[in-house]
Length: 508
Image (cartoon, rainbow, N blue to C red):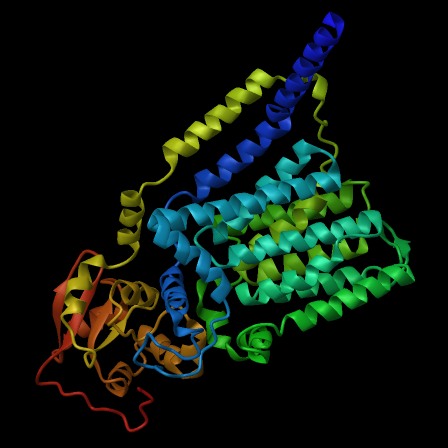
């Protein structure tokens, strides 16, 4: 009996020691360092003008009004048809807001980012089996992805993208996978964000990569078996069919095409749709990314899977064409880069130092707890981006007092004062269709400002002090400065300068 008791005790001690070694392993410590890096970069501010009307949309839906189908927030396109193609992603942000206020919004966005890069590190390790190389690849992806660090609905799309890549990697490695997950994934995806189209392109690229077999230098492809091809074909058909399970029907499915072919001003003037500028820091990071891929292709002996080459080419083209897709390029390329970095010495479990790893984990946890922004700090960052100072003035105006507002402030002003109807906000699509975006851009360039201001019967102009329109109107005797603050100027049309409404006005 004594021998048995001692044996059980020794076994239990060994089991606990093994668990502790796994918990406080080198891999866990590295994962914590990656996580705390993401936290350090993303913890400050709420740099996304869309979050305010996302909250309004979710409030409208959850209070029983249904899905928005027309503009409700502006006076320029009020009542015009509009599709809320991100409605499902808005709900978690709204619930986080209701539960924890602005801290809840920040916490949710941080959790999504941690999930994305944690999953990406694991996917990179699955491809390379080298934790150090995986971390190095993830750090490059973090630098690329910082373009979208904020309370973005897009983050849910990247979570879905990683889920898709996990399933495809499993299918390629083992010849089978839980493909049945993909149709419900695409059903969630289309109701969450327009990035579902990227997922469908990558799925099609994956299938096409197995339609041929051969080796071309360092590129290789294996042909799918008939059973595999049948499974993939059925999954693609089911995934496409699942896209139509949404509250807007075919219109939501066709939305990416509408953006690509009918929203030219949106794509050419919104900052995140611009091409990479290699003269700024983000452009230099993108250049490092491209050089890394070139060196990997030239120096590494690792082979490219044909579909992986397609993924990287698509991601790189998208990233260099539109800066917002640098995040996408980092995700699709990180596993391949990790594999090419296999020359980095692998981690050796026998030299594991649990005490050091535990200290690293404790340090990262302490930094997160100490560095997590308070509600006051987050609101201070909001106040540096948006004109809180003007809110009392706007509350005193009547709905008929049309205000021309700065584009990035529209959503914030409407969230703070639901009675306020803006001229324009960052829901760009509905304003471009009605011609309002074109008129706004002309105002920024001082092209026929009098005619446009009269067309929309503008009584007030709310812009930042350094805008050319602010300067021009402040020196125009037909306008006077009603308020001047640290970051905003409110200009009022003079009483003796009547509005000459244009006969072609499309104001509702």
